Image (cartoon, rainbow, N blue to C red; front, side, top):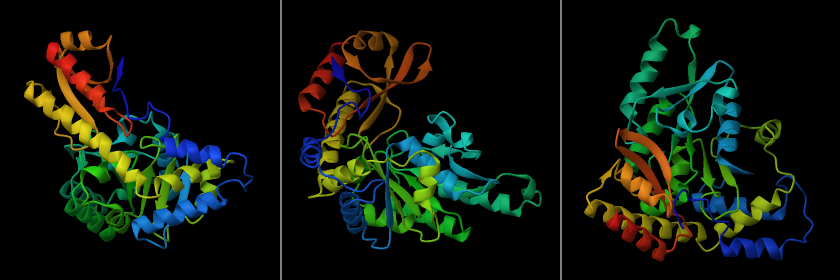
Length: 343
């Protein structure tokens, strides 16, 4: 069986497992107050060139999104995102469950366009009935997006300008950030730290057993984040388990190096699909490939390959997702290509 259903099917990078084993019997303070979390945070601040940033470690992406968004927003506010954004489509109403409305706007290639955001905010704050409406209190984007596309540096900077003009925080979901960084070096951690008030660096999908690193660059936001995390049940008692992993991921550029494998192999698969005449949902530069295939081809692949259903394209075609990861082997990509050629 070939596995391309997601980018978190494997455990962790061997170096992380080695470090966890080596430090297993050490006794450290809890709740992320240990040496490893401190050093990991320092490494992340250095990589972001943002020495004043505050760094906190959480266990998963949905948890991080829910905690950050609920922590930033006032009770009468909602969060703006693209209609295809993860918090609007695939988080089971986690944001609404916290009492905040998701304010979804039209998207293009999975992205929230600056002109669309600007027009929405302008119209809202000019509306004399706005006190009866849900106020946009922050903007959410993800990089990569839900369909594997990336914001350019100019797009990110433009979004920042709009958010600053309206005094609204910009928050970036980085669940797959490593793959975005590997695909487009122009949008690097320093630029993200400069443009975003808060963002998180995903570990779960990029080499860690579990864990996300929330980076708060705006000193006026989330001042009691430790307490906010605990209120949401997100404070890990054995916090050092997260610190050890991110300490290793940010040693010798491991985070970026292992992400490059996924991007390269996804590119190889995408090129092969195009040569075979398959229609792509979008041209993805990252590790997620969305392709529309005949249902008969889907049925032939299912006993031999795991992949994700995305959406029905029409009565006889389905759009599916193939995802590579930091641990994907080239031989498996070659085997998948061979199977597709035979279908």
